Structures are given as structure tokens and as C-alpha cells.
Length: 429
Ligand code: IMP
Image (cartoon, rainbow, N blue to C red; front, top):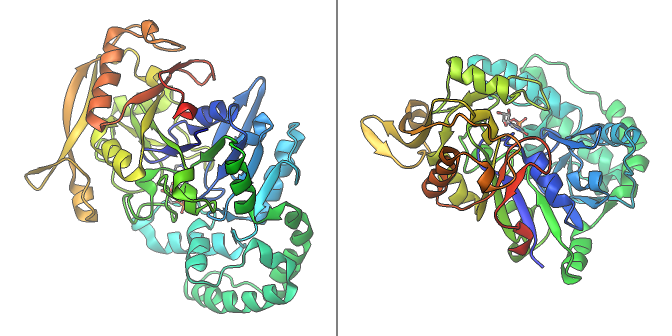
């Protein structure tokens, strides 16, 4: 039985929630493998709207949720999200949610550093979510992070806090921000420990058992390939690897377990936060896309920047992310536009590129080269088969397929779960 990994193929917010929810209903386990509560997935089920940041989406469908070792976990955020969705009637308990005991924790000093550093960057700020994601991953790589299993060992916590505070208080003081006191942090961690530890286990063992038993595993990516710390628009990226390969290392499985990789892309492009965006539209069309697409960040509420579909960018995301099929979302937002532009390359310093170069200067200078396609007047909203789509909309999708060099295996035509054109079932490989 094939597993499926879902990743974003642009800069995030591609509408993963709906696709993941649909796939979760057909999976046995749903695994988060990177990122933290910087992610935001909105799931509409019946008359309930669930806003999930850290919890795997499968919980909404009664499926076992796993938070893998590659995720950074803010225990306060975790517990308040659990309380919030429980109040909406979801069953979240140590029977339905398992957390890797070797996952890294986010402490209150991480968002403090995140924000203080952003403030000190001024105009060159990254536009982070301010949730401490970057500083927590830095601690993990620097080998000083507090991990879930440490919550069971007060002496380990105490020693690790000494090391952490030596580092972070020096930095905070240098940035002119308030420093942290060890005892208060230790006391709080000891209070949180009995609330978090019942969820903790070596999840790799459970995942290995599931794999052997032929269970269907859905790996739920957060953020997107162009925010990947290696392959994205560095330094305007998040601090984890968001490509599909991370589904293996971020959960404790081998690469062969990842299965079919489904990339999600909007039929246009959006981005929150700073950084290069060659096809950004600062005109009325950009505003129209934002209004029609309800383009406001799920986590921070910030308006998203909007622009034309960038096939050059998505092609790159397909290659480095390992995408085997593309789910195209929000096609209906383009309804009625007389002409659509698709970016097929960049002009940088008089040269044409079919990829976004690694140099930040080149990325900032990249001018889109467009191919213009006639739009369609009929509505695509709610379409459930190709026959429901105007001929021009089909042409648009087919052209995207050619340019990004990946088949479109799913088209989403409204926020409703059933308003989907399914070309190929990802679980069938
Ligand atoms: P961080 O992940 O909070 O460090 O933010 C780094 C960059 O990633 C910023 O540009 C954020 O806006 C962006 N980002 C982080 N999480 C998401 C997400 O779930 N969707 C879209 N952008 C995100």
C-alpha cells in the first residue's frame, strides 16, 4: 500500500488543509515531520471550522496523529491547541496523538529572540511568524536544545537551561531585550512535563509497525519548498527542510517509506513575509486576487502578497521537492479575468534563466518573462470533472502541467471538500 507525502510547491498557504483533510480520511495515520506552530491549516468539516497549527490534520477525521522528531514543539502552544479543539468536540488524547520523544522543544525565550532579532533587522527583516521556530532549530543543530524526553529528567533540564541561558541571555541583553530567569523556566517546564509526557514515545517504532502492517501513512508537510532552508529563497525562508525527503528523516523512517509525493500549488502565487517574489502584482489585479482568494495568513492574519502563477518557480519546487503529482488549488479565483500571465523564466541582467538562481541579488533582480493566455468567462467554482470546466481553463491547467514538468493529478475548485477534480488517487501510487 502506498504512502503519500503532501508538500507545498510555492511559498506556503497553497490550500494544503483541504487536500490533506481529504487524504486523511483515507489514511490510517497522519504524520507531521517538520515546522511547528508557524503552520496554519484550516479544515472545514460540516458546520465546524478547525484551525490547526501543530496538530496533525488527521485528528479531525479520527485518525492517529503523530508529531515526528523533525517538528519543533512549543508545549504551551501544543496544550492550548489540544484544549481548543477538544472544546470543539475532537478526541485528542494519548490514544489518538503520539509525539516523538526526541523532538525539540520551543521555550519562551525562542519567540523572544525571534522577535528581538526581527526588530533589530529593520527593513531587512524576514517577516517570521515570531513563534520562535528559527531559534529553536538553531538550538537543535547547536546540540543544546531541550527535547521532549528531557521533561522526565529534572536534573537534565536544569543543566540544559544553564547552557541555554548562557547563550540566549547574552544575545537578548545585546539586543536590548529582557533576559530570562532560570528558576521560572524550570518550574514551568516541570509543571508542563506531566501534561506532555503521556503523549511521548519513540514514534519511529510505531511507524515501523504501521509500515509492516501495510497501513496507509500520510505525511503532512508544512510551509513549502520555496521556504525550505536549503532550496528556498534564502534567507527569506523558514528554518526547516520542507522538501518531501524530510518526511523520512523528520519522522524516523527510511526514504522508501515516503511514497507518492503530492505537491500543492495555487493557480496563482502568494507569499507572506518578506523576500523576492518575481511575479508579484502591486496593482488592482493583485488586490483582486487577494480579495477573491481571501488571502490573509491563518497564523498571523497578515495580508498575503499576490501575483501570477510562476511556472519557473513551481518547476524548480517540483524537482528539488521530489513532487510526482501536482494538486492545483483555487482555480476559481481566476474566473472572469480576461487574460492570465504565466511566468516561464526570468530576465536577470540581460540573461534569461529557467530557474531562480541562489544569489539573493539575482533573486531580487529577477524580472518575470510571461506567456499570456486568454482567460475564461464561465465559472469554474464547484467543478467536479473536466467536463465542468471551460475549455480555456483546461488549456491553462494543461499549459501549467507542461511548464512545471509534472502531471496535475487533482484540481480544487472551491473550499468544499467534494469540489475537486481527481485525476489520480495518490494512495494508488
Ligand atoms: P518562521 O517560520 O516563523 O521563521 O518564518 C519564516 C518565513 O516563513 C516567513 O516569511 C513566514 O511568513 C514564512 N512562513 C512560516 N510558516 C508559514 C506558513 O505556514 N505559511 C506561509 N508562510 C509561512
